[in-house]
Length: 339
Image (cartoon, rainbow, N blue to C red; front, side):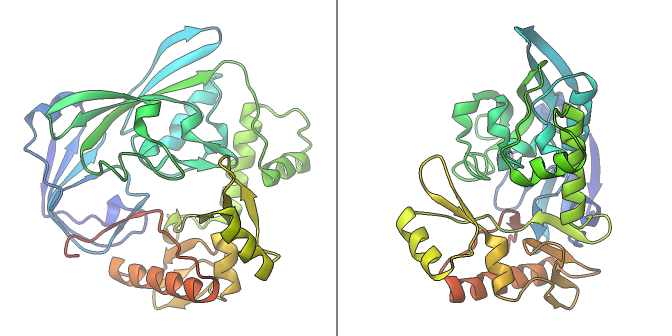
């Protein structure tokens, strides 16, 4: 286990915000967890690749940096393949690895930044698919019981960009590995119209898994700024989910508002559209701004602080609420131990 005192966390978050921690512990094996001191949610933090984190201040205690690696095929049955992946593995590299081994199910989730262990916390999703459709189980270290626990997919309480790890039992678990149910037979998921159009432009009438992955990568690169160039965490706000009655009232006043029905007959409406209608796309206040590529992406153009980006997010929430009566909810976790 690598130990670093008073480290800068700038290299450990995709916003490239400069913050510090009292201590940084880099965890590379499950066995190292046995020697850890107790976790204190009031001062400590578990961190993957920091792609869904905004440091609005310093971490007074310890940052537990999860770098547990490994990929293993556990079982093959009726063309279904059970794969176990260490939580510290890079998600996009896992997607590429699965395609290399002719394993399918992850291609729509290509190029999503972050670690594999963070995927169930956020229930990552893109282009018509969410992790919940392939997640079999999660193994984690339970800080309260000082023991490992395995949680089935239904026990993870996965929702729209949500889970028990993010909401009901935040900070109770350090995820060490996930198990995914992949397929040896490719079944394309092309419900997202933009993805179908991208494949059609490439002349892919019967796309392969790799073709779908490549199309997703092109779409993401065209729409989202590269965190290596301009610090960001991808989409900063969730698309609001409202009741049919509330949605009908909104649509009556805003007939061009993009929306889609969810499985429980709610309406998921476009946060990006509302932000654009408020004239905020491309808005900038110093080094903190909103991308001119995508209205959902908040950007650190150079040396913005996390507090400045948080203030910008609150400004967006206020303006959208004033115009539409909808309170936008951030996707990233905002770290502010002084709050």
